[in-house]
Image 1 (cartoon, rainbow, N blue to C red):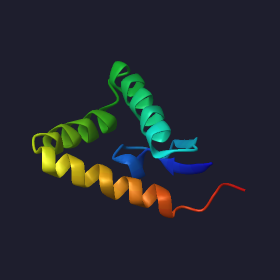
Image 2 (image 1 turned 30 degrees about the vertical axis):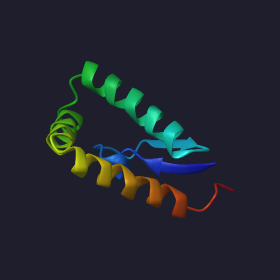
Image 3 (image 1 turned 120 degrees about the vertical axis):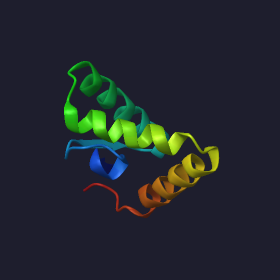
Length: 79
């Protein structure tokens, strides 16, 4: 199991997510983002706008995900 923060995943806070795969951690981050959207958290809304801009380019989004997968893979396992 590995841990990444909301900020490491393109978000706005230091909330930690732990999962066995990048796909699992991405899903946890997505749920957290939805909660922050409902709360109208301004910092997260700004981060979401930045991600939305990134999604305008399929190549850019694919590169972003590939970099995050590599970052996840390079992390040490939780102790």
